[in-house]
Every structure is written in C-alpha cells, then in structure tokens.
Length: 280
Image (cartoon, rainbow, N blue to C red; front, top):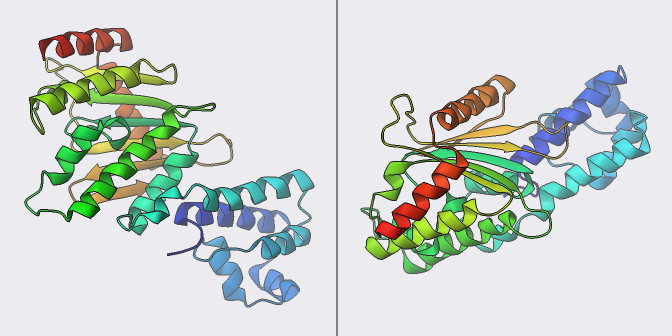
C-alpha cells in the first residue's frame, strides 16, 4: 500500500506540474537539475509515485516557489499521511482507503442514496444488519471491524471543527425493516439526531415524488483549500467509482441538487422523522 493515498499524490503532482510549467522548465531540464531520471519527475507529476519532503523542497527551490506556497504544499503532503486511523483494520482495501482519506479531509460532504443509508448516517445496529445481509456469511471478526470503521467515520460530524454534511435520502429507507423493527427504529432515531446537528442537513425524498430517481449512491467531497479540486463518487453493487474531472463532478453535484429540489425541506424532513419514529 502506498505511503500517501492516491488522490493526495495526484493533487500534489498536478500542482508541481503547474509550477514547473510556470517556470518554463521541461521534464528533462528538471531531471537534470535534480540529478533524477526523467521518469521520476513524470511519475511524481502523474501521482504515480510519492514525493519525499526533501524532494519536494528541491523542486520548490528550482521553481522559485514562495515560502507560503511551499507551506501549502507541505500541508498537502502531510494531509495525505495523517488521516489514516483506518489502517489498523485489515478490512480496508485501496479503493476504500482512498474514499476514507477524502472523507476525513473534506470540509463539506453531500451524499444521496435511495436504497441504503450512507455510512455516515448508519446506526450501529443498522450497520451490523447490512453487513450480515449477504448470501455469504462474513467472518465475525471482519464484520465487526467493518461496523467499527463505520462508527468511527462519523466522528468527523462532531467536535470543534465538524464537517458539513448534506444528505438526501429516499423515504423508502425509513420503511424497510432491515435487521428488524427495533433496528429500524434505532436507525430513524439516529438520522433524526444527525439532522439536528448544526452542521448537518437531511432531506427526504417522499414516495410521492414523481421526478426523483437514483440508482446507487452519490457522494461529493469539497475541501477547505480553494485550489483543492472536488471529487465525486458513484456507488453501485460492484463498489465505488471515483470521478474527479470537473465535468463529472458538476454532473454528480447537479444530480444531488436535483434530488434536493424534489425532496422535503429540512424542516419537513425533521417532522417526517419525528412522525415515523412515533409510528415505530
């Protein structure tokens, strides 16, 4: 597993390529000046290879990067390494590690799902129920690790500098008794509490909506640095698919906004949750 998550490497590499171009230097010129092979420069800029702090400073000196800009690149380098509490769990593959890295660093997250509660909104009971809701009986230790990871992920929604969350959920989710009646009640209560956090907004798409359809799930990550590009993810039966191109991100964002436009307002959604909890 790479020392720095893929997206963090790609982001830093793209910025180093921009700085090189701004200095009117070719890849070969940089390689010669640094005493490297041209392939090392190419791999760093493409995000295919991690860059050490020493090499980062060598490139910044060559490009005559201002001290405050060097500091920003150093923070990017460290951010890609710091938010990795999940590495203690053997259940985290490269694809999910990339997703969790983005989730941990995002300043705001928008999620939409009509078929399953997103991980950031799952109660412990619901998380355990969907983990075991498979034709293949999972190893109990692995299953419990999956549940623990989902619960720890939700820590970003609380604390001194919580992540902003906008969630768009289908009403049908609050009807399915996944795991049983008590699990559903706990899940409804859990979403209600999250929706009451000042940094979280929950929209519910009612069953009566005539123009809201989504297959799978969507997540859009935004970051505090304006130079840090947003990333979108599409979730489907076969896993997660990253979309970091500007056009793809806009399309996914428009889909989330479209679902919000066809959903209940946050106040109406809150009232629905209170009523649904009373029914259970």
